[in-house]
Length: 230
Image 1 (cartoon, rainbow, N blue to C red):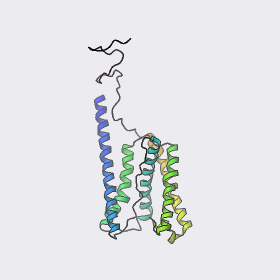
Image 2 (tube, rainbow, N blue to C red):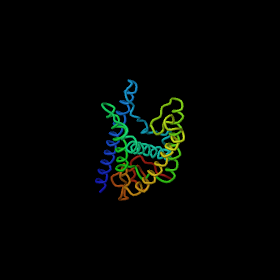
Image 3 (cartoon, helix red, strand yellow):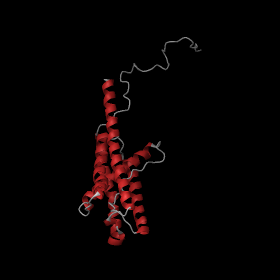
Image 4 (cartoon, rainbow, N blue to C red):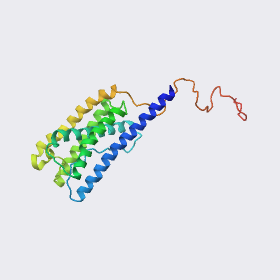
C-alpha cells in the first residue's frame, strides 16, 4: 500500500512541476517577445497584469498564501477582462498575435487549470481572501493612475483618463476588486471540496516504523561501546 501511495505522490508532484514549468515558459516567452516588440517600436499587446509576486520572507506561510491567491486572482481577471472587453477590439497579426495568445489566452487557462488539478489545497480561507483583496487590487489601481498621470499611458482603454475621464476610469477600475471578490468567493468552496495534494513522503501507516532507520530510543538493541545510562 505504501509503495502505491509513494508512486501516486511522485507522479502527482512530477505532473505539477511539468505543468507549472510549461506555464512559466509560456509567460516568459510572451514577456520577452513583448519587450523586444516594445523596444523595437512594435505593437504593445497590453500584457503586464499576470505577474507573480513573491513575498520577501517565504517563512511566513500566511503571507505566501496571500501572494499565491493574489497571483491566481490576477491572472484569472486578466483572462476574463480580455475575453469580455478587449478581444472584440484588438486584432493582432504576426508575432504580436502569438504574444497575445500566450499572455491573454493560454496563461490564464493554464494557471486556473493548474490550480484545479494540482492545488495546493486547502489554502483559501476568508482571512486570506480579505488580505488578498486589500493588497493586490488596491496597489494595482494606485499604480495605474499614478503611472498614467505621469506618462499618459494606461494599460486598457476603459482606464484611460484622457479618453473616458477620471470618474469613469475610476469606476471601471473599482470593478477589478469586485470581480476579484466574486472569483475568490467561488474559489473558496472549490478549494475545500477538491482533494488535497498528496504528501511528498507518505506517512508510516503501520505505526511500527518498519523499514525506517533506527536512530536510537527505548527498546533499541545495545551495541558494543554503548554507555550504560544511569
